[in-house]
Image (cartoon, rainbow, N blue to C red):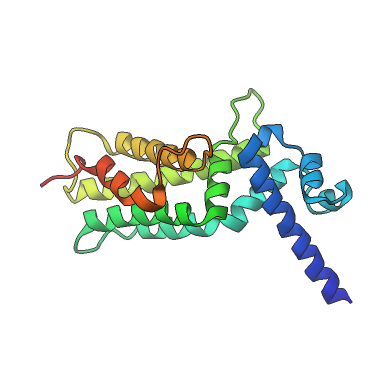
Length: 207
């Protein structure tokens, strides 16, 4: 009986996260409450509150379940640019990250939620700190990889590694966000992701 209870609790936990991802992407995390999530799942409020104290806990859990592994793999890859062809390795790493997000709906939802849940307020919350830490981590790993390319004299010297890292982070952010918008089907990352990355990186590198 205890095993069944544990399995049912885990099933409920994931059902809540699945529903939360749908609602957060549909109407925004700031406009979604735990009561909304309970109603969407057909559960009682108590069932939802038993698993999550607040909405911030839900967002953190979504990241850990659906996106942390993807970013960890990307980060590890970006730190290994000692390949015979570091430029091509860098490009393929970014393309692989984008294609994985595009093809994995849960990862795509989680990444987009995290990118769009940082609110500019005078009061720093635990959630803001958590989300800003994730965004800073992505930027930092991009910067390390780009600086590595610069040290290998693979980059044009027109722009600093810091500017290029900020530009790539912003571009990837925009691609993922637009790709997830039902009302703005301007791009298809599954079909055109590689070409869009090549287009953006076209003039970065030395001949």
